[in-house]
Length: 212
Image (cartoon, rainbow, N blue to C red; front, side, top):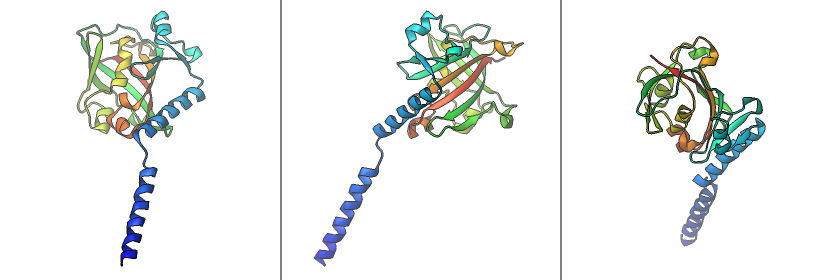
């Protein structure tokens, strides 16, 4: 009986040891996330520029050189494809914004959500964005946002608010060039709550214009 008990205890101990060794730590997940971002940068031949270079270029990125600026404080990479017409949000100003987007999981290279494809072509996400002394805060309009419905949230992820300090919002767009367009690589910590808990980075392609 004792031999059987000791054997069972030993087996349980082995199972716990194997389980502990097979469990993935948060540090492991962050390492995989970093690897996925680096792989995308390499595969897409992205030319990463510093914030100093970005500001020296009048807060623009050279699309022909596939430039993305890295914001060190957030880990977000941004390429401004089109700066748009109109004007930036002033400090203290709140504005309705229309957003089209495509969200891609960089770990799996799969589209997670998009209102910029045929299935959702009639949907434009409505949000309200406020500039408080250079910091931007955004809320999706309930019932008028695919993003909000899908993720059951009204808060705009921090990573998606990065462009508002640099792009112009046109109220009327007579041409595509009037509408601001950016590409963003958003690490999990600045993305959706699901991305944050599962630790995966996303690539976003986003267009922004002022709503009415």
